[in-house]
Image (tube, rainbow, N blue to C red; front, side):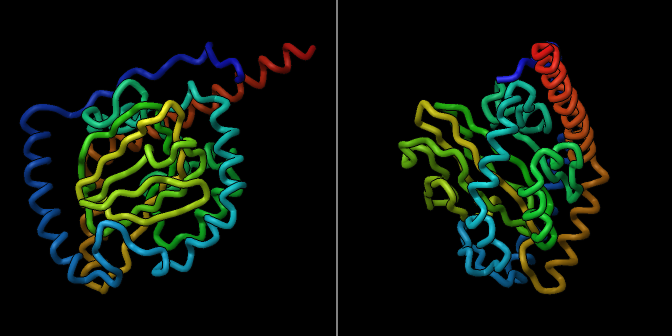
Length: 271
């Protein structure tokens, strides 16, 4: 692994606190649940915990090219120590992501492509460009033995895809529960889930798990799309959006610095 010891670890981001945060969380959830009921009725695909891949014609190419994506993920993992933990990017994830046991290398955040990160993953980035209304995408890296506690996503207007890249040999022990349904990840296989159902993850193996995770808009009729667009615009005005967006940008800069430092060290060693 390349030497990146000179790149300092990020300080833990601070989040908004007190009455304001509690007010936003409580009332925001109530509003989103009302919107969710409308979006459920407006959905053009099943509203089950897992949604069949057959509804999305842009997905087969990811399984076809998974080896190329996996190769790019392996290249990123050479700088593993510079990849931030999920809790470093989103301060509200402290309950489910701890001690950098769940790392995230972000390629798209909040509908915006991260140019420095995707420059390292050109094939993956090109494939992601084909997804209608892509919202987020990242390599999700789960440490051996880690358990992500049960939690729920924030909006029915988004669906989430998981593509297995680096999966433990005992893959049945590395799995996700969504609602009452459980699936293990498998190399080169992709599935789609609705993360507004309670879900949790186990990696009961001694090996790391790496997947490509990406979110895209749920196909819906007009009013469902309208409410999704409106709720996203409102969310972007809050610290729940602004804080992670800044943290993602800062993390991208730090990762770029780590790569440059490692390359400089290799050049110096070769002289």
